[in-house]
Amino acid sequence: MSGAGNGKSDGHLITVDKVNKHFGAAHVLRDVCTHFEAGKVTVILGASGSGKSTLLRMLNRLEKHDSGRIVVDGIEVDDNVKHLDSLRAEVGMVFQQFNLFPHLTVLENVTLAPRRVRKTDKAKADVRAMELLDRVGLKAHALKHPFQLSGGQQQRVAIARALAMEPRVILFDEPTSALDPEMVKEVLDVMKGLAATGMTMIVVTHEMGFARDVSDRVLFLDKGCIAADAPPQEFFGAQSNERIRAFLGQIAQH
Amino acid sequence: MASAATSVWPASWNRQQRSSATMITASIVLVLVLWLLAIPMAWAPEPIGNNAQAYAEGTRVTMALTIISALAGVLIGVLAALGKTSKVPPLRWIASTYIWIIRGTPLLVQILFVYFALPALVPWLRLSDFASACLALSFNVGAYNAEAIRAGLLAVPRGQMEAARSLGLSSWYTFIDVTFPQAFKISLPPLVNNVVALLKDSSLAYAIGVVELTNIGNRIQAATFQPVPTLLTSAVLYLVLTTMLTQISNAVERRYDVEGKLA
Image: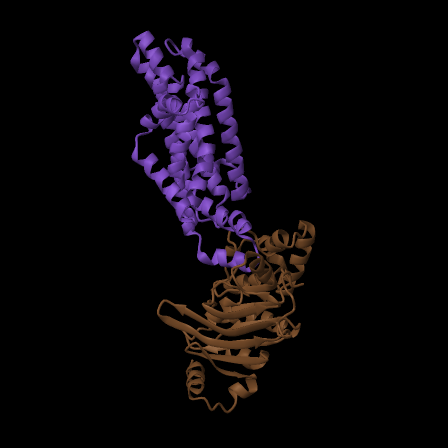
């Protein structure tokens, strides 16, 4: 169900066409063109400042693009409030800093959007939320507040919260970067499970293991341009691009 | 003493339950005091005992001024804070001008203006002394509340708005479900200060003839030529009211302190 969609997306779930973005004098994205397909897991890699988070955040309009077009599931990404509301209901997002609502319980965090946006009644939303919390292994914590959970647990709640809206695609903005090392695995495991169900995922991350093992495709951004777009075997195999080799070398060192 | 009231409840109760109990108890005590004040006061020696009814009535008027103005003042404060943080320039100007004028002029002048000058400017707006005082006090405390609420709104992390919007919540639901509850919690201590100040400032309604606690104290003082007991009684009654207000608001603060940040 693609609210304002009219299906003019050439069969791609997301189309990004000649998109440019400036922050003041900095030209952070330059004529970026790409597509994202339904059911695929795409990992976006790149050095700090390469524009990868900006590209991700533009897909649900947390950042505005200066020029070019973005179409998600037939919905034009622009300032039209109708487009924005239907867009954001279809595109889930998981943040580096979790951004759970601290004044609400875990359960209320998960049910808020379905109740307000989808108008699901409380009982139904609660049942669905408990299923999702069970799926991320946190059923027992449903009535706690976010501050009572570890970082890894909070991020799993954030994933359940995004899933509750039954989005067409989930964007992950460095989901494990704010976590202690021992908690990274529990979040990655949930993400792997999600990928196995056929969820469309676009993931900005520095977890090379996840990119190699779980993704269908790796995008490498360099200075605002897509410098590589390849399946992971190819990307992590004999890499001819000098900058990518340097990047992978740096990541591998720690 | 003021902050320890929540510790009288059974240890097995959690923070929310103890806070709710304090809120309810203090509110009941407040109502009882206002309702039955004249009975214990009548036992006091002259000149208090024989004027107990008048003191009780003055206390009720002071409390009515405070509660009405506090509620209206929170509403005005929220609107002015939204205006001041608005993306629409004219709304920002209106809110800023309002706050600038109110905070830059004495409350006494504002009360006199509403009572005497407003009917001269707008003939159909002829309010009673009580209504005039409420209006002036509401707009006065509203301007101070606006700054407190604005600070609260600005203190809510940006990521909260982003998370809410990314879930598809409209800007209305983002505000009432996510931003406002967090901002209100942050604003609560300064809002409470404003209400306690309002309770005391309501004594300025005396100037336009509202028969509230200060007015009563002064009238009885003038009639009996006994300034010490009569004015002391007014002062003690104010102290009782502010203490109860602080208890209620401390409990409210604890009630919303889900993270246990308060000791």
